[in-house]
Amino acid sequence: QVQLVESGGGLVQAGGSLRLSCAASGSFLSINYMGWYRQAPGKERELVAQVHTFGSTTYTDSAKGRFTISRDNAKSTVYLQMNSLKPEDTAIYYCNLRFRLDGGSEYWGQGTQVTVSS
Image 1 (cartoon, one colour):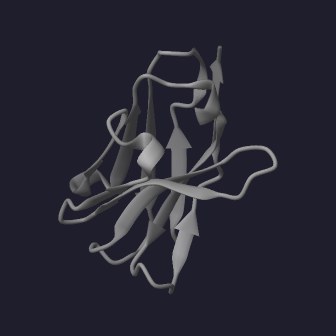
Image 2 (cartoon, one colour):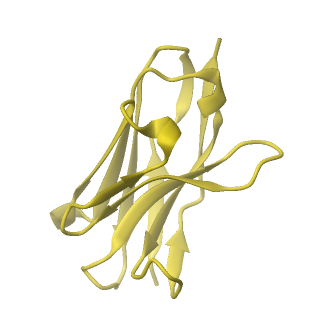
């Protein structure tokens, strides 16, 4: 069974920074995608950023230039450094682990709240 445990959310003023972490444990393929999604009240869950085991990354347009995703494969941990935060970044951020981009098994963390005040 795969477990994803997130940390690092909180309350920050606009323009501030936060760093999210997500550690994966259990038995799973070492080649995978780890990423962050977010869901704001009344909105659908959306991909924020994703990183493959070999380093390729994907960002949603609103995150480009402000957020940086990285991973430590030895620790099975993914990070999301968020700078220049805006009130519209307020959401629950969920860690995700998957093995294919077109479906298949995937796992989710419990979510961590990020609140950006104006």
